[in-house]
Image 1 (cartoon, one colour):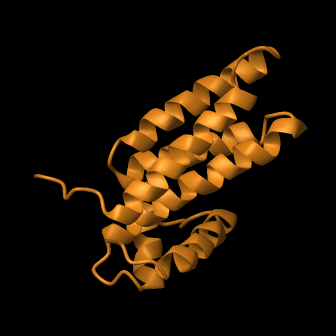
Image 2 (image 1 turned 180 degrees about the vertical axis):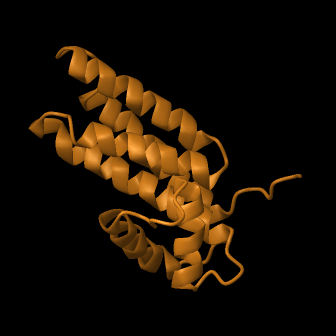
Length: 145
């Protein structure tokens, strides 16, 4: 099955997320501060590769990886890694919205997001769902095309 080309909004948020990851790698991930930073750099590079794949599932995996790094980096890098996390979250949201029949439906969005994150019965973590919904409403004001 052929995949539709990415929308202008998806291209924009993906470009922003890749740029944010590059900045985060420059601050945290070069390995100069030890094994923990080297591990963080490996995760950030893997997240960048995952974001470049066209699916919501790969973007969701990237978001989770960046979240792991943001919880383990030192205080001077936290803000920059968190910015990369927010940018990756926007990619997840845009890709989930593109799979909806009704792009304004909150419930349909959450259902698509649950599939992207590989959860079903238990649903999304409350904090993750709240963050995704904030981005859903923020990005919902912008057309997908």
